[in-house]
Length: 422
Image (cartoon, rainbow, N blue to C red; front, top):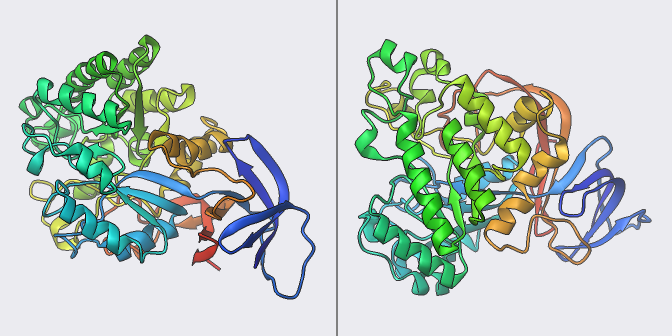
């Protein structure tokens, strides 16, 4: 048995915020309250720590199969545990794509041996070709929890409508990468003052805005559950807000880098600040924060995208887009949102636990007697400097050297300690 003593238990689902002991037995929560100590108990003194549901990330890239030099299921799950995540959903842009039952089954079988819950999304279209739908029913039956061609937009509106109708029938979400490539001169950096200064070309916000507008209306027409991934534009935020008001079943996710950084960071961090969609202007960043405040943006997701050092050192022109994010997500949320007065701690936790669970219909993201013991213990006040050593295989992030607040101390999944900082 594991006894966690004197923790500040915070559960957004029930709005619980109290100091209590939590007793874990056989992987489940047995008791919450004042628990007498017995000899057979392993004890964690959680005085001064917050105990919250294990974080859930609906948007990660573990590069497995096909690009395991960057990340694999094992190292990705270790990075997730180090960040306080007990459940993650992997995107389908592996090599080969997760567009068939055999590839999906291989991933899910290997995931059974991992320390956290690693779930898998299926591609929407075969080989991400944007034309031919996968057998969505077969993929769901084989264990896919949702559908996405993340990394590429689905440009054919008719194909997307059919996909949404099938996702609605199957009662699973469909998640969308929103960039019209015909409007992008060069991806990875916002088209604006910095791209002009660097003579880079850039990806304008209108490339995102047009796709979000279209897809929100298709979502409204079909009733499908639609996730607008890694939202970055102020107009896109407003369109999601309006679509929700009209009755569309649309949610949006924001990454820590999009609510923390602007295009000015590209000049300082170069390729480490290159991602799709790009970080944009301060107006866009503030719009994302307002969206998080008013519930337009319901989910914080990392878009954890590992690349090798050699790839990122190729320079801003040649390097791939993307940064890692699992191990700094909580700290950036506390530093950029809670400490700045934009969100309460409870609201931050809501967007990292119960809201992502609800999107994917997971019986997770909350704390209750009888439930699996999946939770994180963290010190909301501990300051630390981000080092260049990560549990991830990769270290492509602009946040190395930043002083952040909020440190994960323990991650517990299925009642087992899968990460400790002590």
